[in-house]
Amino acid sequence: MNIVLIGMPGSGKSTVGAMLARRTGRSFIETDALIEAREGASIPALFADRGESGFRDAEHAAVRAAAAAEHAVIATGGGVILRPENMEALSADGAVFFLDRAPEEIAGEEHGGRPLLAGDRRRVFELYTQRIALYRKYASYVITAGNTPEESLERLIETMEREGLL
Image 1 (tube, rainbow, N blue to C red):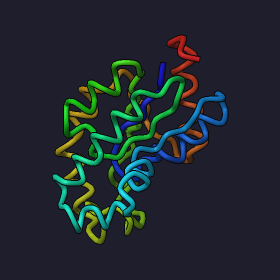
Image 2: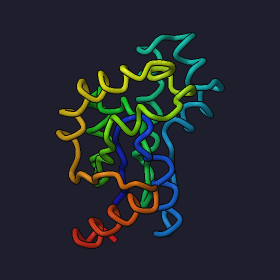
Image 3: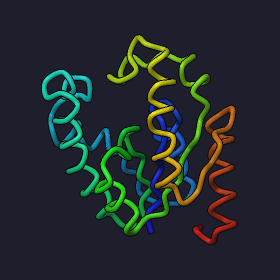
Image 4: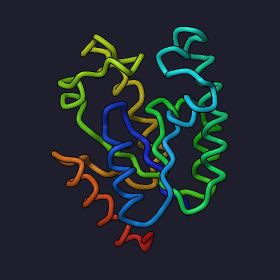
């Protein structure tokens, strides 16, 4: 079974996911990195060139490839929950964890490489409001992000142990 991390951009999915993969001996797949490798362009460039809809098409192809992996930790992009078919693919052989980080914390950081957040603190709150119900809908488990990636990792591992996923 795969471990799938969903949550807002800036919630720590990639950092915590890589740490979890190292700690558990699983492979690590970051869907945004997979998109960039497959498309030969950065996420901001894909947004600029194809718009959000074109990016979401590329994201879906990457999600399908990631979901086919075995015994992996998969860190997704923040908007992966916007297409039900993404979540169907990821949850078919994966336990989905929502890494829930307060939007106030996310908004206090720099997000220049994230097209939907760049330069606009208010946008973090808008996206959180728009997406929170979907994150909760698709999550098998909700992990409240810690003050550090290490704290988030420990909370994630505690839940995995309690649920027999380790």
